[in-house]
Image (cartoon, rainbow over all chains, first blue to last red; front, side, top):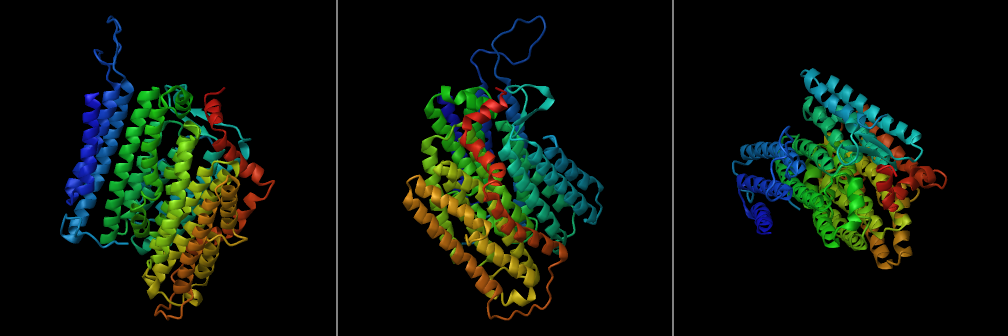
Length: 112
Length: 491
């Protein structure tokens, strides 16, 4: 149970960072932390105590295995996060070129 | 048309555009219009031949819990037709409009990825697959919102991307919890398992999904990104975002998850009703206070999403009928209004209503079609918007919520006020603008006139006799939530 709570705390750390930080790069890092927390949660759900990796081999008797599906999901989710993070960094660079700052309180042309 | 083609055609054309086009965008535009046409006709063909059956396409011939299913029922075809229609007109409109920003094939390639993502979300029968397609659609919209390359556009895109990531993360957490509770990701199998698991988990997952998909649908209080993103994007993209995207990623996913899987729990229906009414009133009020034309329209989108949610939340047959009909109507007239805003912006170079003048003489087509769209969105008979709003309001009264019905009527008046402001200051004011040349081309006019015609013609969907074959099967799919599971699993 404690592991799940720690994982949830990590998610909240990321959310806190997104909500309170003023620096564009720190916001991107917080978004990544949220992503890591989710991936960790998926892996935790797949974990079975005292089980082995999920590969069937000849001549080895079957034992309890961890659930392989969430691991596949995590791989996909990591790739998606990579793409999103790359796009965000590109946007942050463009914003820096336009505004000469990474501070979101100074990037305020849109309002209302 | 077999189901995977709805994903393959746009995906293939996205890559073909990237490989074959040179510096010019002629080929890119032609190819994307052809594939949008194919998608629209494919969807219409499927609508004609379906006989109200559920068709399940098993990828690689693996059965439900192992392989990924593609599912086609009445709701799927309905959404596919909307996506096809709006993307086709949007691409025809883009031909000239986007050259005013740049002549680059990248726009069309990203546009095709957007269609791929949305079609994928619509036809998939697997929860994680839905998430992946959603991310494809979102990633391309982040780029498309920033396409104009101005400072505000990057700002809006960044804001949108961060909000999108937060909501996607929560959706993924919801998927993880669902998987751990039910040990499956196929939507129909989850629906089968739901009655056997602890109701507390259903409420937890429902709350997380409501937040995640609510952010995508821009329901108040999750709406803050929408006015920035939708008003900063190029006009055809605004039309896609406001007309289709918030409905496919938001409302459609909510329908599938809360109605077809969770079996429409009373608790969530009440939340939908309350959030719907709050969205109608607050966004309607905020729309009146705006002076930026596209921003006003974006706020009005939130308010119209509120109507759809209210109709869904009422949960009676009539309420869902109104909501489904309003999804179709809103896609048409909101896209039309964004096209109007785009052509006004192209001609006068501004979106500020105060700086616009007597455009009625200069741009007769834009002015007339925007008048039609304004009347339709504010619910004036005989346009389509009147019928859907009327049905939702009657449903609210019938199900014993007269206060909600009264608030919905107030919201309709707010919409009328906001759109009259556009008409009064944008097209019919005494101000003289210095612009003398109307830059609207044939393609743009064609797109606008087509949608304006559909504002009239859309109303016939509700006539008894036509309704039985068009809208009623969709209501049936949403209302009989156990049916989806049985049909997909082949019982």
